[in-house]
Length: 191
View 1 (cartoon, rainbow, N blue to C red):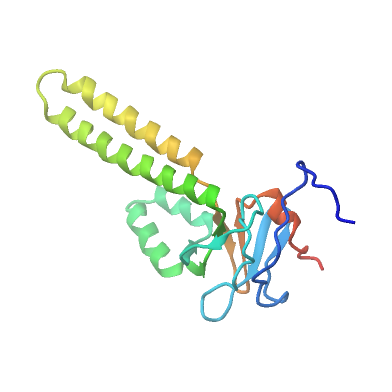
View 2: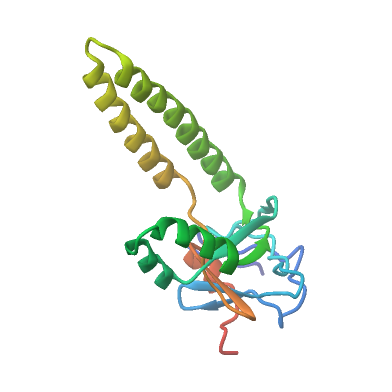
């Protein structure tokens, strides 16, 4: 006899496309997803489940994630620190390519957030430029442009499903922003 449907249960998806090997991950480590860094600079394929809600999903385009130790940010306080920091970032960053998996809902939400951010930023920059050059009421348009820019960036940050790199070391990469249902379906890194 089949189990009755529980609408409050964590979504469970079949592993139509299982991961390459349990030796490569993904695993969970408290609030992080951990994957093995392959020698080619890529990560193994993720299961075809949304990293936010654990619903069935499809992998997106492979994305290259870059990471550098946050301790280097202190270099910004030395003279010409910003230029030194950029040079160090380009030379010392660690990179990993991974195709994150999102369901239709989170993919639509991501596209909407990027659309709002792009159009809002373009309009606000136009307002800032116009307000900076206009003779009458330019100051008000200039200020509104900055407020509009901040508002569009905040809206983008709220709507966009945040899935980002937390750390890359020699063998493993840790990602933050995965949903509890997805992390609960992964084996623990201790096993």
